[in-house]
Length: 86
Image (tube, rainbow, N blue to C red; front, side):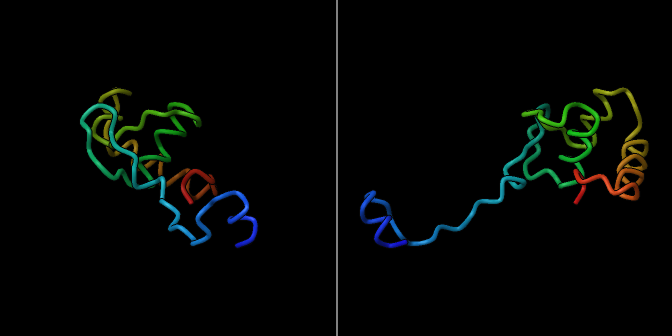
């Protein structure tokens, strides 16, 4: 590995992998570090490949539903084994 890195002029020291989940913030209010459930429910209800994420409050307002409805749906999706919530 080191030979390949030297040959390509790359640094051979391993880098810490950045957890992309922690960089998500709410598109509306700017809340930092959305939970994995907030990211998952946004992907499930809006678009699996979305680049814009919502906190529970803003997603509930956007979809015109209660926050309790979203929490119930998250629980249901988890029980169904949805991979967006693992």
